[in-house]
Image (tube, rainbow, N blue to C red; front, side, top):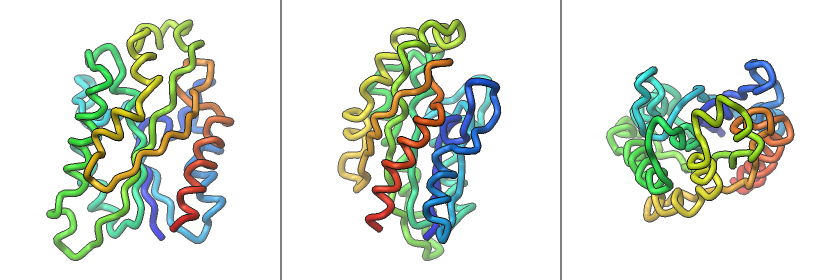
Length: 206
């Protein structure tokens, strides 16, 4: 089975302690558990669901998803974990932006043109992004980038993501993970373990 993990810096494994890549990121923990399967890591720091970042055009997930799917086809399962960067102040978004954004991305991911070569449509899952750690608001950079509004958006993403996925046959998984306390938005090792355990339970059903 081939599994694709499409996300942002938390999927990449960003370590807030020193900006390195965590070895025990959740994708690698899943790979250890299912070493007979192919694990594809498509984590990009700063990636949004569907918003254009003025500092990096490649960060728009909706614009990149079809290319990624075609690159790695055929794929059996896709896990999408995005939304953290959409809560940044620079985008002036709100919770409903997550609903509209994930629907936009999924419409492109489910476009029949991607699979016209006979490739099967993967089973898609949307994973809620980590909730912001309250300590993150003490971090100058996080406070400037997200503020209380960003904290509020990330505190309750599931109902909005579910509404955006409605009717598309895509389930939303809330691992209830809270980001680490260094910058409040990136998971620490225990957070990665929590996400891995939740997704392993889902994968075992296949």
